[in-house]
Length: 156
Image (cartoon, one colour):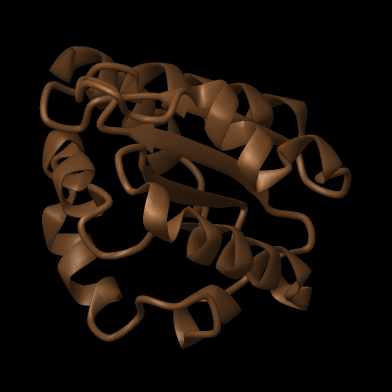
């Protein structure tokens, strides 16, 4: 899996692309970045930027990665509210949206279909989006999400 990540990130390194990763606390952002080998970058960018109105979301970005804790049914409404605030922001109006439905390895977690339905993703018409089941601890599903991002870059 590490070889595939390396190949994908090398493609990103030939051009400058801004990607922001957001999610509620304990959603799995840090673990995903550990898997990708980019924790140092994350540590610098994430300090104090947990909400969608943060300076981080004001950067022009090609992609927004939203990490959802699939076990956190109580706060999925907070994720939905923040997601739509972020998507409405002028600087993100052309950004692609990748949603990682994390913690799919946990029994009784919300499925990708449930998360998609709750977040009303089919109503998102102004952004290309993809929702990907994943387990940040094992890395399962992360490659597929990154491959989707790469395919969107080729279209632009």
